[in-house]
Length: 185
Length: 185
Image 1 (cartoon, rainbow over the protein chains, first blue to last red):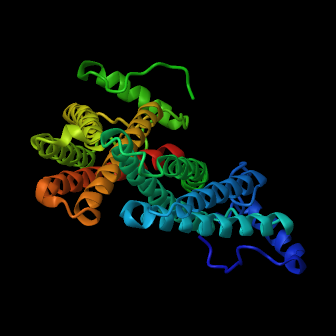
Image 2: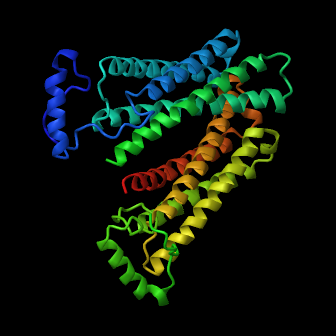
Image 3: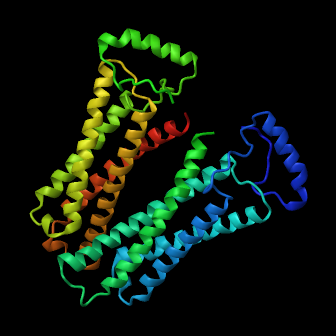
């Protein structure tokens, strides 16, 4: 790893010198240079689409759960709202970074940023999955084991949990791509 | 990837010719040759210890849960017993493979076997984590939200779930090590 400090996203006015510097580094097999462009890695249109859908499904999940009147009485449902809100914020943050990187046509694939994305995706996806599983266990308990769906908003709970699982499923590719490209450097 | 077929663990009587073949392949940078020996990767004593503890904690979790009389009435608890039993079998199987590899002093780090271990670990750890989260959600519902621990075996449920989480936590390093070494080839 070289000791040169270099910003993650470079402003447009310093782009040309930086590009030249990057090209020079490329020839030296510098580990800080950009990696092979795989769709789904940070700064690609596929990653932006994934982030957008992660954010959308997480937001719908939180909205549907928060719209039920009795969700605060169950700890797991409160935790679902908290975890999916965090997922929303994280996906929105990275979507903004991706949009910015696409607009200024810069590459985000250096190891520090990839490590940051992999750790963040790992934490948020674990929390989202845990919340979805805990809530699913309780919904199954209410619906199948206690046959008590008439008094509860089972359909709304199920919709919210399904959206949470979809959001988790969409975080997995971005996590594994970051982790894989970090390991294969 | 070469097309030569080569067994994962070689019997002792064919070891010397195989070793010579491996050494020859090493010189050619053949991707099928053994990788750097990292403790925790399949065929190392650390991996054997991890598998042993994964198996132990999963077995204790299943035993404690199955010892309660009312676990079959809750779907999530039945699922916990099923998922942790699968985890037991998987860890035991790989422990036996590790013991065999250590006894015949052979290396298990080729890409097919690492892929098999990474996929298997990924599936079993996801199932174990999902079961532990679902059961934890229900135990928190019984204990904190409904204050109904007097009629239920809350302490036993909690013990079983804690063991399941420990077992999941011990599967993670073997999964990430296989995945990392698969990606970094």
